[in-house]
Figure 1 (cartoon, rainbow, N blue to C red):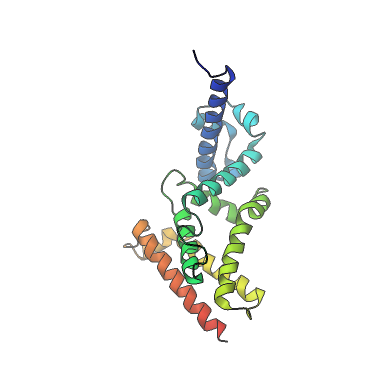
Figure 2 (cartoon, helix red, strand yellow; figure 1 turned 180 degrees about the vertical axis):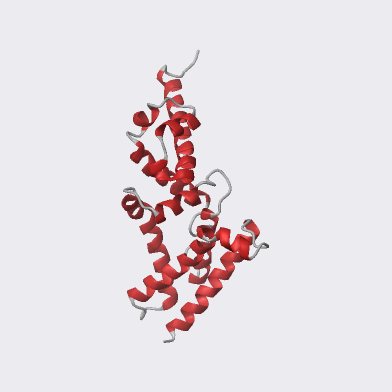
Length: 218
């Protein structure tokens, strides 16, 4: 005799449908952007009824925000900001871990391969979801990086200096993703696999540390 209540199979099916919608919507939004994406296309890819989006999310805009939240959550679970570092690790090691995590997230080729393109679209052509995304996901990460830079720059560093240096570090990471088509044409030997990401993380960290050390003297 089954111990499952009659509602449990239905709840499981609904949870699976919601998950398929998130995955399918991520792919569609990444391919054509929020405005051009249609609920019909998303539901077709998810193998769901066209009413499923309204049932699970309310509308396309709320689905989009949930997709962004979902992608950030899974990416950080897979690549934590300070993965493997002990409490009180040196700021230099924390900076490398932060850069490595950032690069691995935007270049991920696994389940969330669409995430990098989706975030790029949102940055270039922002939607109403950006405010919530900044508050919930980006701001906490920015605070982690600012704390690392502040530790490296010293107590005398101004907030403007810390902010500018933090933006420069992130800009280096983003450049390799956003300009990947140009980079690969200029330097055909350039790859962005796991080994290359490790080397790139090391380079960006060393470059940033050298700049911070030099600028802190002035």
